[in-house]
Image (tube, rainbow, N blue to C red; front, side, top):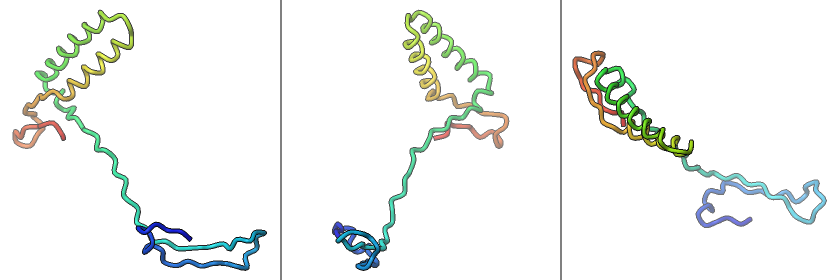
Length: 115
């Protein structure tokens, strides 16, 4: 049995079964290994505070920005270009900083973008 140097101490027991019921000249080997695998971590998804759109001032700013970009999109000839322009616009609006005070927050604490 071949094992890499890193995994030699993880081998807890190895047994051979020479009288096994197989038609071969090889001897089956059964082993137990104790290996701890790495945890797979997924990328954290950025969450955006959608409650900001309840504020009329923020909603007005966002809608104005979105409408101006979409009007530019109408001048393009291909559908793919217009789709990419709209996607970029939404991406930019997500990262825009619209910090305001909401009435449903605890005693006037400001709501900042969720990291």
